[in-house]
Amino acid sequence: MLRLETRPPNIEGQGEVTQRELFKNTLRMRPDRIVVGEVRGAEVLDMLQAMSTGHDGSMATIHANNPRDSLARLEMMMLLSGIALPERAMRQYISAALNLVVQVSRFPDGSRKVTRISEITGMEGDVVLMQDLFEFVTTGVSPSGKVLGDFRPTGIKSIFTERMVKAGFSPTASHTGNGAA
Image (cartoon, rainbow, N blue to C red; front, side):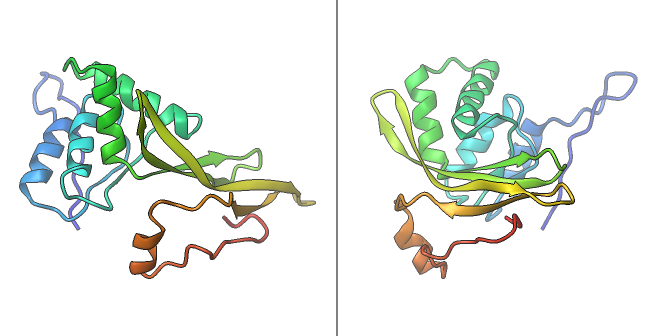
């Protein structure tokens, strides 16, 4: 594993290393997977390109209120790249590159939990199709103030079920308990 980090310019405005530069260099290294701590600008195009060209299992984080909003944020970042792409082309690019959106939320007790796993299933017209596969359901608060709940399947079968089974995962297994999702 190799870790690369961005760097701001020095006092003379020299030496900056951007995420776009890191992506280009990363792809030259022919990695199996790419993990990006946070996409927030034009590097989103490089990330989506990498994810749709043989880097299965790659991941990136993005700040958004929910899985659907994360797709809108990706579109906005693509617009900020300066490359003029039609709306439909941006959405096709996103739907071809991404399989899942995993939402993590902070709760009033300060804990962070996975609250939703949504799957991108393709496009219909100009709309990226998504379906929620799992969600965190709050069941209460402990006497110490800890948020309690269960991470539950929604009952919708993933289009990737067969791939998951081949990879050794059980699509019927679910995690329940006292909020340790």
